[in-house]
Length: 246
Length: 199
Image 1 (cartoon, helix red, strand yellow):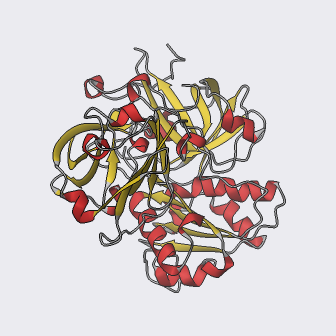
Image 2 (spheres, rainbow over the protein chains, first blue to last red):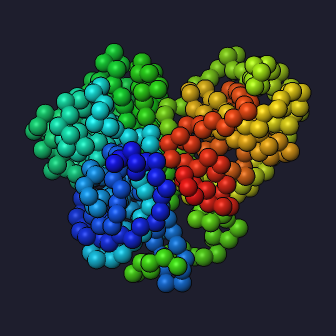
């Protein structure tokens, strides 16, 4: 099903907001009902189209957060300053409102349940969204592939999926946070960005041959991907997804 | 018209003039790549054109930069929907690189350092439509934007303008490149909004 979804022609589909959930003070998850959704792979994204009363449209891409589950997908949206679509999705749209969706899109930044090698996930901010889809897909498939997550975020209260990630940790996921602005009370380190020492301490070593998925803002992804290659990871095994712009 | 989205008004419409359908204007220069940025020393750099018979023409950096250099001002359109207008580049025209090449090929596959590939019809690389660019906005081209040198084919979506270019293979048959194998359109004309397979 998922492969057919990658290969098929992409048509615009009517979608309805079925549920909403606040993830942080700013980020919101929308559950969309999309009749005839063809399924997707963890890590893929969708185009969402909004149409104004005069016919003007705006389209942006959002990573899918959920595993393939019938006609439903979740997207998690962090509003971008001066953005045109993300503030609407994060603050204005309501349950029952119609949207249009096209996808799934993207066949590279994906994880398939047939992959058995170690997987290192590195998230910067809302870059955690497609990586959460991979964690959920791994759980749904009862995969034994070893996963680790390093999640860079500004403050403890900017962590998206906090409670679910805590449950993943309780189930054995090695998860490390890098707080860049404010650390939790009692945290052993001052706020800091991801650097070579942290990567060496809390991610799979190059000789374990992980597939690495790095997603976040451009500067974050550029830095982390460079550090991973410098540490000895095979550049072909470091997959990146960068976002930037309004 | 599609389904009207309650409460959505959108931006000032004036900013969307002169752009291909579905694009919005940006003044930044976003970076999109599928993997880490390759670091290529100029001493190691080379650019090669390989014909369908296996004949190879090569340039190292001094030979390449000794070719006629053109000033290029073009608009960029990325499939992720940003467009950037009036960007300034310096580079070598593919007309000058392909000039002495004897070929019957209709298709090309462009190869990059780091393993990226993209395919284009040969005619889209000719007649002043494509360059190997190595300076942007008066400076050396930064690695994250494709330096030392990238293909620049501004009439197609920007994924066709392969960063870190190292060679072009000419062929009698079309062969999809990296994104073209992963759901993106084989040709990628922004004015016909050819984003994905089937568009």
